[in-house]
Image (cartoon, rainbow, N blue to C red; front, side):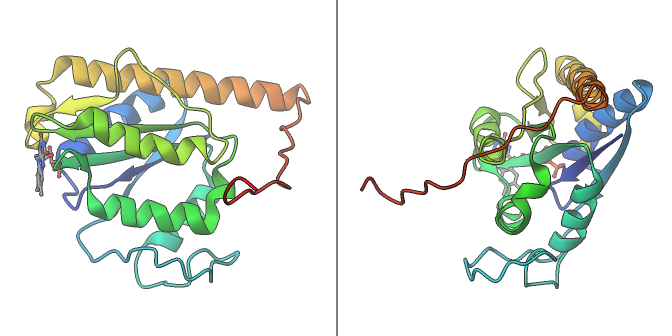
Length: 206
Ligand SMILES: Cc1cc2nc3c(=O)[nH]c(=O)nc-3n(C[C@H](O)[C@H](O)[C@H](O)COP(=O)(O)O)c2cc1C
């Protein structure tokens, strides 16, 4: 079993990475594999609602969106990490995830997800609220922790000093590992995935 984590910062070794690495270390201790997918600093396109999504993902292939989608199809759980920018998630992580989910949201169904926000000082709660929205609409159970998944620090080395933040990351990893093991046990016992109704799509109340 494997958890795919997204570092929504251009800093490959910054605070967001430090938080995700703490999750990864604990997942490994729990016998779960992981990968931290780095968005890096290259430009990320926005979703323009062109409707040309296909089995291959997004029609625009010049950034890493489809590479992430391919990995997501093989992954069992997800953690989306973001730095806080002006009290919201980084613009680049939202551009990235909008295209991932609009083109390939069904690849995430029934797989647990969690979001993590890191900040120097403020805006973590509002950032988490935004990222958590991807889970609810995609039939994803959400893994919790012993506090909301926030870590404080301006740089990677400061994040380590946020003892409660790091503890929250470790507890999140334990809960995610437990969920993955429960889902695998359920599958082994023959518990079928729920079948969703999709007939009704009222764009406004008719
Ligand atoms: C454009 C920009 C906006 C920011 N806005 C906030 C903010 O609203 N609240 C805050 O506490 N920190 C803010 N920060 C600081 C970052 O959230 C913080 O340094 C974070 O740890 C960076 O994560 P990273 O090292 O993974 O990139 C901002 C940083 C940038 C570049």
